[in-house]
Amino acid sequence: MKKTWRWFGKKDKITLSMLRQISVEGIVTALHNIPNGEVWDLESILDLKQYIEDAGLEWSVVESLPVSEAIKYAGSNRDKLIDNYIVSLENLGKAGIKTVCYNFMPVIDWIRTDLNYKWEDGTSSLFFDKIKFAYFDCMILKRNNAENNYTEEELKKVYALDKTITQEEKDALIDTIIVKTQGFINGNIKEGDQNPVAIFKSLLALYDGIGRNTLRENMKYFLERIMPVCEKYGINMCVHPDDPPYQMLGLPRIVTSEEDIEWILKAVDNPHNGLTFCAGSLSSGCQNDVPKLAQKFASRTRFIHLRSTEILEGGNFIEAPHLEGRGHLIDLVRIFEKEDTSLPMRVDHGRLMLDDEKNGYNPGYSFYGRMYALAQMDGVIETVKNEIKENII
Ligand code: DNO
Image (cartoon, rainbow, N blue to C red; front, top):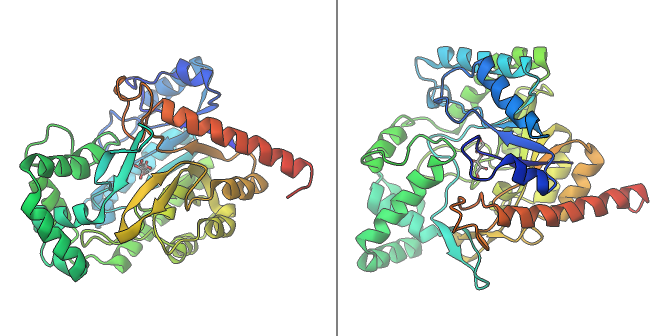
């Protein structure tokens, strides 16, 4: 595996020279300054590429080249937006950057209710609390028929929470779910936007009447249109699973399970239509046996996110330490190292620890936390390489 790191560009407080010191080999990044839907021009791509190479690294993966909402819900301007996407891919291809991660989640990318869940040892991590999420859905968004998505027992807890929750806690929940989490990965809503709940609701309304089948067809349409440019330049598209991998907020989610992934890979059966194997996202769905999925989809995997979660009682889930939890990362390294030793891998979502918070590093995208996880995985990778060499596995 090639050891890569998600870096948020020249403004990232974590610098490339820091990454050189901790054995990172490749960079995963995007042109974060270009608004969603606009073309990534060749000059900007080459400029960032050169900046990365000057630091002795390479730009291994684009994460993400975002797919605009109108492509997902098939708005009237989707063809124009796909044309722009194709030009961006062409420019990336000309620059020799050939692995492109994207997702096809409507409106909202990853979802957590808590970005600073405290562990007993003083570190903190991301957390998803089903009741808090249901509270956001039923009592803050007041989505039509939201109650139908929760059990009676869950709703009782939601109503009980309503009696004790403070305005400050409500604001924090809104900020976490639809502003902060989305904000630093270039989501639909940015820090400073007025009335994010109203913006969010109008985005949800774009998907009224759009179910899983329609979204699948729209994804197929998008993939079919971009495959020729991918073939021309040898670009591998790799879709990121939905995080968490189940239906939420009445929105269709279509990259959640073995059946979903199989559908996508078969619908456009082209080696350039590949997968980002995000063990963290997949492990937070109880339907998924992560090593089994890795085994099945290894040959179409183009990029790996090593991260693990633990599903807790009541539908909550937490980011597990990288060597624990439902991600079974040691098994995954064995599977993927046998498949292709050059697959780019990044550790994902480290804890906040030591000086991470003080230095203003983002939850999930910490420095010390990810460095620690990278060192753990580095040890696993070297051990597995040796197992393969000695014919032990
Ligand atoms: C969250 C990330 C996602 C991912 C996108 C890819 O931490 O894994 O935001 O980058 O879904 O498009």
